[in-house]
Image 1 (cartoon, helix red, strand yellow):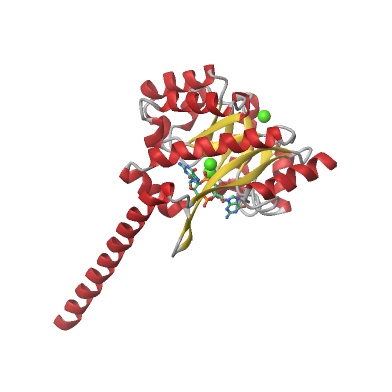
Image 2 (tube, protein in one colour):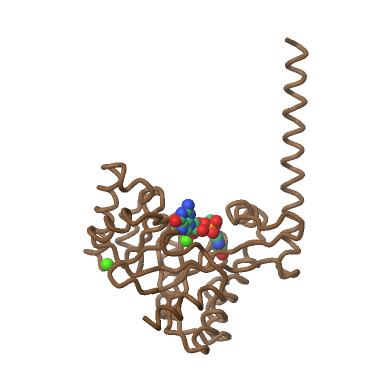
Length: 278
Ligand code: C2E
Ligand code: CA
Ligand code: CA
Ligand code: CA
């Protein structure tokens, strides 16, 4: 028994060491990723339920690691937040997404909204509003087509958040509350924050046709969003059944694998082209 215990302990530390080594490799790599051009944005279309038109795209970051291949943001965004690298990466994301939106405009595509994920640490930087303003000026993107996706953790401190959100609104930017339904004091946020869009979290959508409770929650969120005059987007729509029930509930837009996975800019152009030809 004693021997087993010792072995377990050794396994445990080996695992820990491996984990820590992996984390350190990731961190060192991440520091170089921006400079070495290893980061790339993919875009996932957001579709109007009633017309099938592309209304916007959500920018989603990918890291093409030279050895590890594509690393998921679920893996490196938390690390970037922990180390503070998210500030540099986040600025790169806003700049790259805005430049891409301008590029599509120049190429003559009908304008679509560009939605960008903002992390808490980024939002809490005192320079955040100035950074966004500078990028708008430099890229000459029309701010009404720029939307920032914020989670509830970001707006946890309303005394700090509300003035910042109001400044962004004054610049003409749209604001979206991401992962709605997964946090806690969501309803009070809806009243006090100048939001344009509400995104229903994928966890409710994935079981909307199986769980009566989730169906009721989704329907309630949509009704509430509609009566508050918010644009409501369902995330992670994978099946026609899910889309149908969203349509019956009066959901404005959806995004998910059913229409398209997140894709490279060039593939978005093909989708926009197809939409214009219809
Ligand atoms: P999120 O903002 O909730 O983004 C939606 C995630 O759901 C994306 O994962 C997307 O690829 C995935 N998804 C979309 N449709 C479907 C579907 O039909 N089925 C399934 N199973 N998944 C779907 P992704 O790209 O891996 O991003 C994960 C998270 O990483 C994002 O969650 C967001 O929190 C974060 N993230 C991604 N890009 C950025 C970024 O540029 N900045 C920051 N701060 N965070 C980012
Ligand atoms: Ca998002
Ligand atoms: Ca989400
Ligand atoms: Ca609506």
